[in-house]
Image: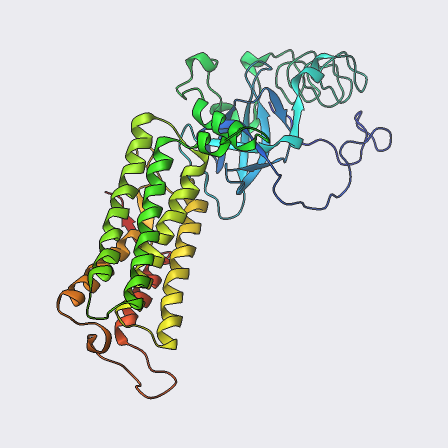
Length: 416
């Protein structure tokens, strides 16, 4: 019941020579410059994802399928259903599990891998009487010889069948995916219609070549709250720098540096709540959130550690390792968030590794050290390997440990 492939150099009537398909061996290419919404996931079946098309065009067979951030997740395996209600299956690539997607998740495709449906309603092609026939077919999206008369058949008679017969799409032969198709059309489907007007508007504003303050107008309220998270992180770093330039006995700037961090956490919580309250997703929101978190919970704690006296060259290497672990953890989250197991509300069930805001536990310990006047030469545990090129403060190992926990793959932290 499906049609697959676009030819490999053979003609469209079944023998070699003549009009080839897309032909030959093609060099692999990277992700496209832009991806378009192709469909929404319905459910998994036999290790593949069954999706409902929300695009007016038909996908090429074996066309790469992506997440919105252009991460490839698989290829189109089969296209199913009547002409007015197209479904397709995605064969996941290595490392991707079909069951990790939930109903309603969107999948994307490159614009150069779509075929206008209107082309299937024109004149004959390959000896048939219409549609995408590839041999003696007579209509619909048929393939092969033998007088097919409709639907997406493969040389048979009608419907989406692969063999002979006078079937239509109501008694179609769908190979191993017969059970995956819904028995009614989309108006009775349990999958909610896709579409996000706010997101489409943001795409338009961000891609516009002209217009005053187009980027500012593209920001949602939740994005502005995320910016406040970044503001707190930057102010914390500046406060740590100001302490280093002033009187070491005046801790006011140091207290300011440590106080800005929990305010950053407050805004980090609020941006998600505001986005769910307003029911608006944002293309920039995820990227802004990661960048702001890196500043507020990565750079800011490292700068505060430097300010209180963790300053040897080896300390610098360890603190840099900590920040880079936070950077890597945030990048991994952006890539894997769509494929992590979800709960009924659509949220991921767990974090992979400790979330970067948990670095505030180290900030709290540094605040306690400041309150006890344990700074500079009075740091807890003192200085190891003193007088050598490898001297360091053992306290910095807290940052190393936390960095390792952030990038752990096996440590799963349940979401509250």
